[in-house]
Image 1: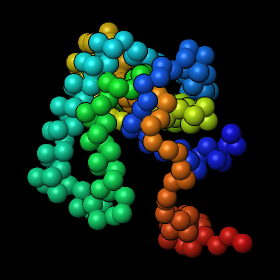
Image 2 (image 1 turned 60 degrees about the vertical axis):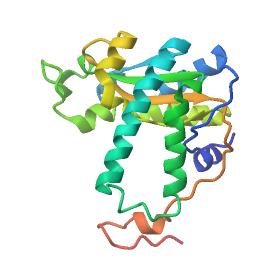
Image 3 (image 1 turned 135 degrees about the horizontal axis):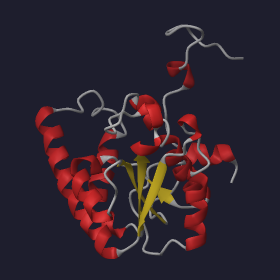
Length: 219
């Protein structure tokens, strides 16, 4: 696929068909993830590919509980009042809620991890991050590479972080070492939903020339 077609149509996919994802396709997606840049060139990432139905079901159960708690909090506090009247909101939340009840149906879950032990001066001796910006800049580009590569191959993904609500259980379930932080949980599979061009605010509303708020005029 043309690169810009990939970028323009890559979107959160939260419903998957039952077909398995082949080894060759999965390897290509993971290889693309490892092409990302990282601070100091340390490549401090790791990817736990979860295919086992039992483990996927266990993660899905924890995910659903976390979603229900987060959804209850959001409703009780009106936490999304700044965006809930936008056209996309109801559809997005409905899809996110559906994912919370069907996460185990995704044939692959990829837990994208950051190894604090490989961050050098970015982390202290106890693993605490001294520069979170530099640390997460060393894993999130890899996650985006993974999602874009999946789209180019016809696979669907969505980047989720709800696992942070049950991180200790997730790490125990997948034998993730103490120094390793799960940063993103990405379901991956052949999509039931269609890809289509995404809708975003125009560049003129979010890009400025030389100073914040100064119009960027492009001819």
